Image (cartoon, rainbow, N blue to C red):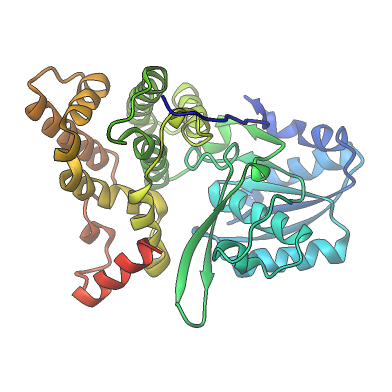
Length: 368
């Protein structure tokens, strides 16, 4: 087992009506004015945004809204958010939605208290441990950004085109996360499938590391994967299945708060490939991961056949010789992605056949 540090400061408020507690939660910490940051029309159409506003008002807090977050959140909107927060005297950022809204909120929080150009943070030109206070209300089981240290944004550059980049630091872990599985009930099946794929990949990217053993972390990761697979099937049949969506939502947080990778290195090659595809073609993040995982697995599996065979046994219950089990474990994973409506090849993303030059550019982007 490798040495590690594990830091999880986020207070999780989980269950029905969890989002109604956020006003009291923010006020108890001494903050006065909140930026409510979200995307889409769902919150307004369902009246959820009004409930959030009332929770803030009842706690004596003032607020200002900033909508407009889109999948693969744009840094340009985050920079608008920084300007708005400075103008309005905001001292707390509340992200409401999935990973895109939460990551965009984190980017705003970085920009609010640092003097350098915000893009420099994500392009690797600057580092910081300073961030404005943030909290979140989660409306989808997917990225786990509500408890993770990661912030991912899409940057439109003049010289390099559109890039998807991340900055990871423990200061970006939200102070609290309100998680109500009922808020996921209206999600389209495709979005549920994307979330399932993302949750699985956050764990698989930490799991398939050659020559590194940690039994306890393995047990956690394998149990989480089995739970996601079973609950994902139920959620795809009925998105209003509270038990299924509860399990997925909690798995989403645990899969990306580093718990499933403690004591070993992590790879995230598939994420880098997925980010390159998302940036260039604006595809859903989870779909890009599912589209390339199979090709990645077939490319690397012979480097650690025993590991893939162990995965097949522990997660899929496959009892065969190592080579046969390893192969079947990959096949079963790909078949599961197909079962939940995810693409299992780049062509399945609906972006057509890519030219060699485009593939080379994507490969370079993924390794930057």
